[in-house]
Length: 141
Ligand SMILES: [Zn+2]
Image (tube, rainbow, N blue to C red):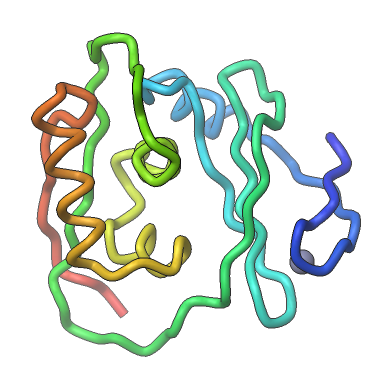
């Protein structure tokens, strides 16, 4: 388990990288998966590659909870995507967080961006072949 220093609170912590997470990373065009770790008033976002190495650490304000009965949009990364290049930071972060389960709403909350911005970026990623589709499902609370 790699030891990581939180970029927000400097607390050191270990992150357990499950086999499932590694499988999700393999299916992502960036060969990356994101793990959200709650810290007191914020979250650490740890990005790991398909070998289980930590490639990046970000942090976010703790997401606002309590939205009910809204539709969730879940971006599904393309399994046969072209080699990702010329991605800007936001495109990279969003694509790395797409695992076919995490909703765009959760991704936007974690990255501190609006849903509108997230949708625009996802549409860009989709038109370039990195995201296969966006499925819609009802939030279960
Ligand atoms: Zn922290």
